[in-house]
Image 1: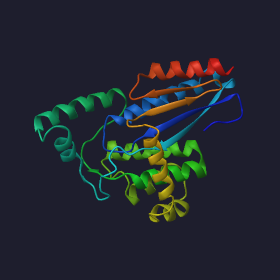
Image 2 (image 1 turned 30 degrees about the vertical axis):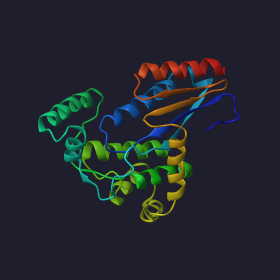
Image 3 (image 1 turned 120 degrees about the vertical axis):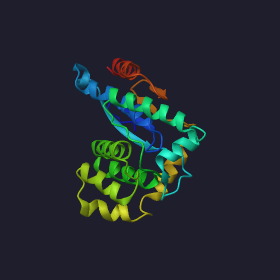
Length: 233
């Protein structure tokens, strides 16, 4: 996502993941929040950043129909222990409140390919702000409102929240093949680049790129942004 303009830089969320792991919503938020702070600072005149999301699936084997979210967590993460699961939901609920997220643990876990397909298509067609709105809506629907992560209903709601007319969004969403191969190739590209966890953030600068892998504190992202700004002046 480089640009020939030396006053611009890239903020590339190469590995973002939709659904399944509750803690990952706040991880992606933490990666993007410093950029919003930067845009409110005095440095915005010197360097501008554009966010580009790349698809990544932690659980590509998940079915489209999905399965019960609570039971999936309990069996796959906590050896079917109700006690451990309750400890987890209590901890994550408290963590969510501190971050402004009202986590819920009902609903369905399912394959997210159609959601990635939708995000990538409209990111290319409408730009990064639209992609950001789509992802925020999808996260809210799944993590806070217990909706299926990639059903037609969920995706239509997300595109509506992003300001995309239904007449434009619905035909794309209902065609399972449109954009599919491009997204699959992009997912394979991320795997080929050695990405095996999310978030995976690359901040592209004039002199060099900075890569931050896994969950980081907000201050670490701010420090990286400040470095890119300093080196780009």
